[in-house]
Image (tube, rainbow, N blue to C red; front, top):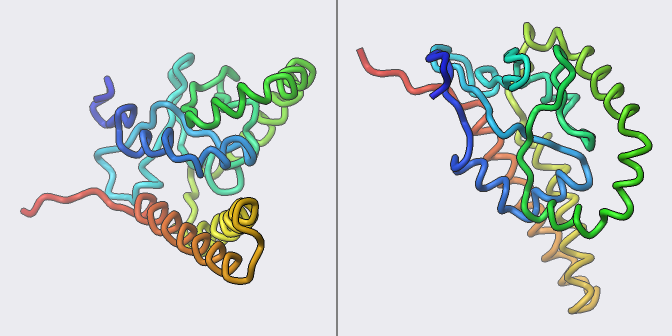
Length: 207
C-alpha cells in the first residue's frame, strides 16, 4: 500500500511483473525496441476508469506522480537510456527481463562505449519526448486495440519462429506455415492479455 491511501502499489512479486521478467519473448521488446516498465506502478483505487487510465508512475527523487500515459502510446519504445522524470530529470528505476540482462552482458563491449559517448544526447532526447506528452495526462487515449498490439508482435514472432526453426529442421513450406501460425497465436494471446489488462475496470461492490 502506498503512503497515499488513494493509490495501490504494483511491484514485485506481482504476477504481471514476474511474467515480464521471466518471459523470453518480452526480452526482445526490451533489448531490440527499448521498451521499459517502472519497478513500481501506482493504481488509483478511487477511480472507476479503465486500468490504463488509473495507472501512474511516481518519481522516487522528487515524488512527483505522473500519468503512465506519458510512457504509453507514441512513447512506449526506444527508451534505451531508461525512463526519466520530466520534473526533476532523474532516472526512474525500471524492471529488467532476466534474458535482457543476459543479452546486455554479452553485448556489453558494444553498447557500453555508445552509452558513454551518447548518454547526454539520449537523456535530452528522452526529455524532449516527455515534454511533448504533457497533454496526454488530461486526454487519455482510447481503449487498446487487440489487432494493433497483436499484429506487429505476431508478425515479428512468426518470422522469428520460421528463421529459428529453419536452422535445425530446414526451411520447408510446412515449417514456414507452422511458424507463422505460432506467431499469429502468440500475437493474438499478447494482444488479448494487454487489452484485457488495460481496459479492465475496478470491481464495484454491490449496494
